[in-house]
Amino acid sequence: DSKMAGSLLKVFCLVAVLVAAPVASTSIPSIYANGSPYEIGFEIGTTFKARFEKFLEDYDLLPKMLIPYYESTEGRAVVNAFFTTQNATYPEYMEELRGMANATGVEFYKIFLLNIREELFLLMQNTSSEKLTTPSCSDVLVKTPTGSIIGHNEDNGSEIIDGAFFQHITPANMTAYTAYTYPLLLAGNAFAINEHGLSISVNALFPQNISVGALARQFLTRDVLNARDINDAIRILTRGPCASGFSINIGSTLTGEMVNIEMSPGQLRSVLRVTNYSYHFNQYLRLNVSHFPDPSSDHRLARIKQLPTPQSVADVRAILGDTGDKEYPIWRNGAAPDYDAYTLATAIFDLSAATMSVYILENPALSTPLFVMPIPRPHTTKHAPAASARSRVKTA
Image (tube, rainbow, N blue to C red; front, side, top):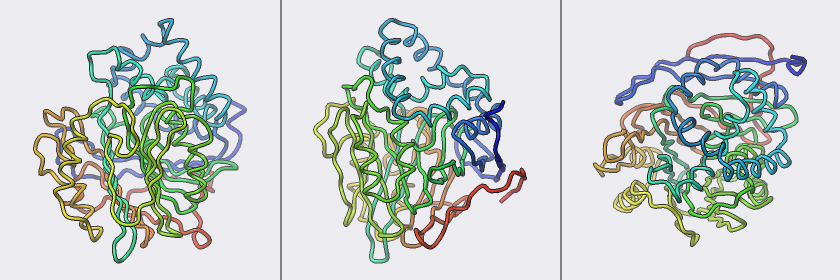
């Protein structure tokens, strides 16, 4: 394919993980790549083709819900409206998805459906008796005497466990980033860092009213990875109407500043600049938005209010690893009634030390991180680019 011109680097980092969970994974793969959006998508698709095929075998909501909805008259109109907007606003990310489709052989429309599934599930939830909202995340943000800390639990279903991966990407004419990424999705929906020293984590929210054809969450959160600072991130998030809702947490190694932003359908936003202590789950805390119930969020919110204000990284790890609520714990293990909800990963962003510590399927209160990665400091440290065209394999 002529579009594959240009150098690309891929590196697999397969790291052994001891997993004390009902569903086990022994590695977390990682890819380094640079090039155009299409080239990057093609390289990701080529590298993880088998991994993505396994995900599609396990993820029955695509054939059971998303494709039938798309094939309905109503669904086709909704998806076309989202396609028109994303294609006009984010042509580079659509090209990345096309590259992924061509590399994997997965039809483009299916990959696009996966990247707007949050909006589609919320639309379908209004008429479905089946719970379609997915298990989602927890965040803690605190200013301590020694600095600023953001802690994030990445929660989702078991089908993600063997599909997720890290990508370290230097896109042409855009910002370099490292992101924990779901199969066949754009980066940005989970947690990430970028070359400008920003840490980013996302929590799902479940508003009942969706703005059809507006900017979809998956594309907005990918675009935030380009932000140069927190104000630039806010500008990116407010460039147009949002289709659904989410909560996003952003911190800066340059200033130690941290914000939590609640996004809702349309133009309504709430920006909280954290000067002491804050937390967020999967329900609106500040905006008056009608949303679907989430018992886990109710329980996690009640539980965190019982815990002391954190004063250190260790305290943040203890909160994110808390299992004091046996029905709906903060660190989730898939047990009923919180069925098939797992904490897939935990990220601790120590903005003062400029580090991201990552735990994979391990309780952060009881274990050491799988790896600790430096977060760039603007003007002092450049995000390591994928500069070589050679591939190599290493184990950390």
